[in-house]
Image 1: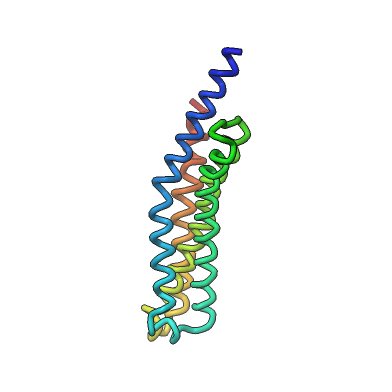
Image 2 (image 1 turned 135 degrees about the vertical axis):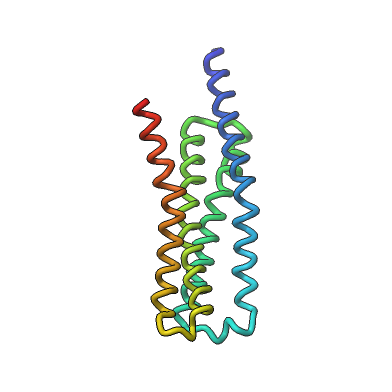
Length: 158
């Protein structure tokens, strides 16, 4: 009986840590979404090519998906009246980590759009835009996915 109580406390503590991580990430993602939204109402936005507008819209969708994934663990924990289980902790941890994928995609799409505007008069403008978007995606993927994976492998080797 005492083991179950200790296990429950451990899961609750892990869940609270996950929710705290989400609280740190969420304001930045929400601010990004706010800036993305404002851009649509600027006069210059209407001058963008349709594909650039579509990239911006897709970037916004990716950020909304990321927001939903970051917020879900807290809602899930609340719905279960603050009693975490091992599966809840595992799912919530995956949701927080998984939210970085759509966030990286959204940022990359926005980088494409911004560089498209900046380099619109240049002969290599499209190549710069695509390169900036792909470079952003590669950079964020490297730091958010590959570096932690490498670190985990190094820790396992001892």
